[in-house]
Length: 93
Image (cartoon, rainbow, N blue to C red; front, top):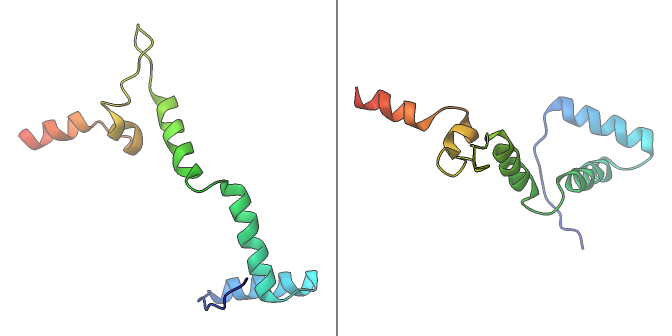
């Protein structure tokens, strides 16, 4: 079941969807819906992009001599690419 909704688009986006719809012989609404469906396929199950991001973060962590990483202690460093310890050291000065 579809539900009617309103969205605001930039003029450039409106032109893109109007042209795409005309080329495919469908309505502009159907062109937008098709784009949304394709995006959902790329995203996978809900939350998968978040999980992929965390896995990518874990891959950045270098294992120590025991094969363990410091990702749980230095997660901010891997997430935001700065060392939280350096940030705290600057605050103490």
